Length: 108
Image 1 (cartoon, rainbow, N blue to C red):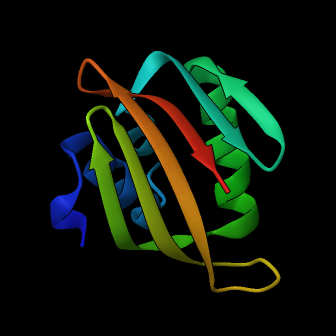
Image 2 (image 1 turned 45 degrees about the vertical axis):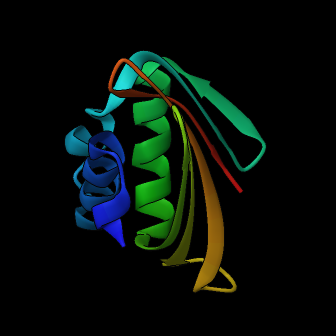
């Protein structure tokens, strides 16, 4: 299903599944915003810290199941497996792209 993803999202999910932090961060704009688990992270430093912590804590892998693209907005449904209660679980990833980079990501 990742064939349907815009390049920045394909790169993000591939790196996430390899747990490669620098490659996970690379598709994000410098001033990107991520919302996850009730917290908001803004900018590369905060997003990297979030990636480090969630990768250490959950060690997730993501299997993209559905992709809906509406201009710069991309909604992804994925089966997420890892070290968390209820694994695996289907999660939604709402992305906004700008200038070929991820400008916003909300997970829930």
